[in-house]
Amino acid sequence: MTGKAKPKKHTAKELAAKADAALTNRGGGKAGQKDRLGQEKGGHAKMECPLCKVTAPDVKSMQIHHEARHPKIPFDPEKINNLHGSTAAAPEAAASSSKPKPGVRGSLKKTGDEQK
Image (cartoon, rainbow, N blue to C red; front, side, top):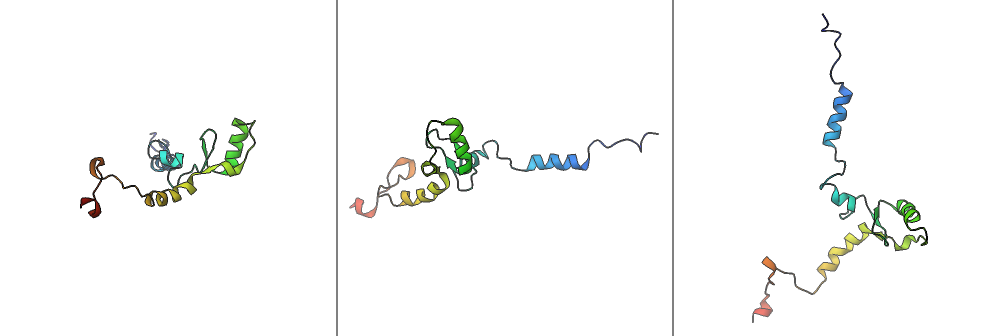
């Protein structure tokens, strides 16, 4: 007669933690690679070290990195590359280029002026 005193195999807390771990994006694998590298606007890695190209989320973390990895060079926050600031300017620079973009299979599309 041990049926009622038998403990449960998993508690509700354990099951909720397991579901949370399985369903929450932790930024790993290919799905989180752009996020870790800061390539897109929403990435966590916002700052990039100009010396070794290591990324960090903010200036304070970059200062800690700089003091640990480059102790002989003085830290200058002006030299840090802001990856989020450079992605906003990149599409505008590409659009203002006078060089025509390649079409299908790398061939250049001819405009009406070039055909005549």
